[in-house]
Image (cartoon, rainbow, N blue to C red; front, side, top):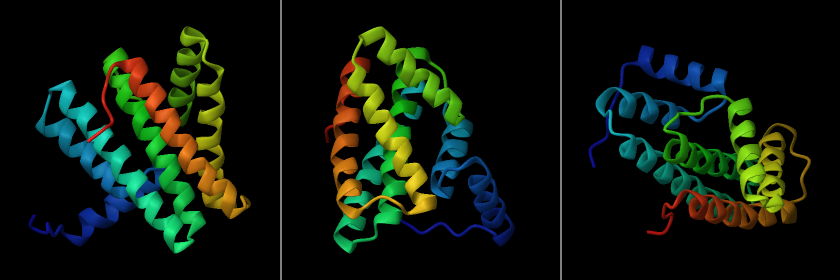
Length: 165
């Protein structure tokens, strides 16, 4: 795949906006491009599923490197991405804020009565916090990665989507 080089002003703006809204720059760039280039909701769902898989792979790499701070953010990114994919599938709506993610996960817990979904979501939130605070012991970050995989499987089953290759 060819490398795409963007003008410095575009890269700087992308980084600043991604930081402001709390998502990685590549996720923001992907969202903007898919939104502009495709009106097919399935393309948007595929984007979030691919981001989920990417973040899981990166998290596994950071575990091997023992970089638990970066790992924490990738775990959070994976969880947020699967929630966004499921929301698009179930509601036909893009969730853009942390509050909307929380509300949607809460609605799933209310609908399914699966309290574990809420607990697993709170694990994801704790990893987002750990990225900034670095309080979690390494073994808890490692456990969180496995728990987010369970979370993703539950949400994918709820929405009738596949997260397997």
